[in-house]
Image (tube, rainbow, N blue to C red):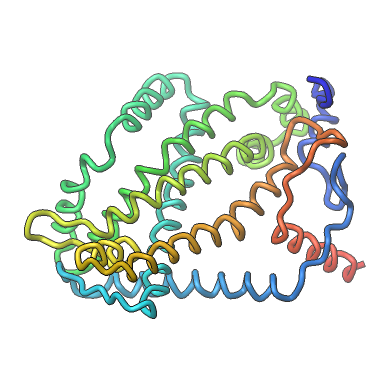
Amino acid sequence: MLGRRRTSTHNPRVALQFLFPTRGSARDGETASPPRAGLAVDLLIACVLFALIAGVVSLAQRWRAPIREAVTINLSPRALPGYTLLSLSRGFAAYLLSLVFTLVYGTVAAHSRRAEKVMIPLLDIGQGIPVLGFLPGLVLGMVALFPHTNVGLELACILMIFTGQVWNMVFSFYGSLRGVPNELREVSRIHRFGWSKTFRTVEVSAAVIGLVWNSMMSMAGGWFFLTVNEAFTLGDHDFRLPGVGSYMAVAIEKGDRRAMAWAIVAMALMILAVDQLLWKPLVAWSQRFRLEEISSGERRMRSRTHDFGLSLDARSSRRKR
C-alpha cells in the first residue's frame, strides 16, 4: 500500500529488534521525548487509583454481609459516586476474569489441533446464546450456593458481565496466535526461548493490539449487562445490587427525572474516565507492537496519560545515570 513500508521479517534478528524495541528508541513518526504532563494529570491519576481501591474494598465488604433480597437505593446525588464505584469494580472484576480465561483458552486452542476442533465450536455456541436467557437460573443457582451472604449475587453479576465480554477477546487472541509470523517463531528457537518466554515475548506481543481493541468493545458491551444485572428482579423477589443500574431502575419506577439525569451523567463520566485513563493510554502503548512501520505522514495515536508515564520513565532513567 502506498505511503506505508513493511518491515522485512525474513531476517529473524531484524524481526525481533522491530517487535521488541529497546527502551529509549523511537520509531518513525514518534518523538524521542514525550511532552511533560502537568501536576493536574498526576493528581487525577492518583484520585482515580484511590477511587478504584475504595470501590474494590467496598465491594469486598459487601460480599461478607448478610444477604438482603430487597436493597434500599438512595436517590440522592451524594450516594451516586459510591454506586458508580461499585459498578466500576464489578465491571473490572469481570474483565480480569475474561482476560485470564482468554489467555488460557486461546492458547490451548491455538496450540492443540485436537482441542481446537472442540473448543472453537464451543466458543461459537457460547457466543450465540443470549446472555439474558440464563440470567434467572444463574442468579438462583448462585444464591442457593451462598444463601447467607451476598457472594452469590455478586458472583452472578460478575459472571453475567463476563459472558458479555469474553467472546470477542478469545477470538481475537486465538486469531492473533494463529497468525504469528513464522520468522518470529524462528527467532524464539534461535535464541532458545522456553515456552513461557516465547508466550510472553512473541505470542502475547503479537496479540496485544487486537486484544486491546477487542477489550474496549467487550467492556462497552459489559456496561449494558452490568446495569441489567444490578437491577434484576424475578417475580416477587428483588435481587438488586447497589450500583448505577439499580439507581436508574428505582429512578424510573418512581418517575424521578432528576435522578435519571444524574444516573446518565454518572455513567457517562465513568465511561469517559475509563476511556481517557485506561483505554487510550493502552492503545497508544500497544502501537509499539505493530508489525508495520508508521510512515512520516501517518498520525499516531497519542495519550497524555501514556506520555506522562513515559516522561516519568525517562526521568528515572536519567537519575540512574
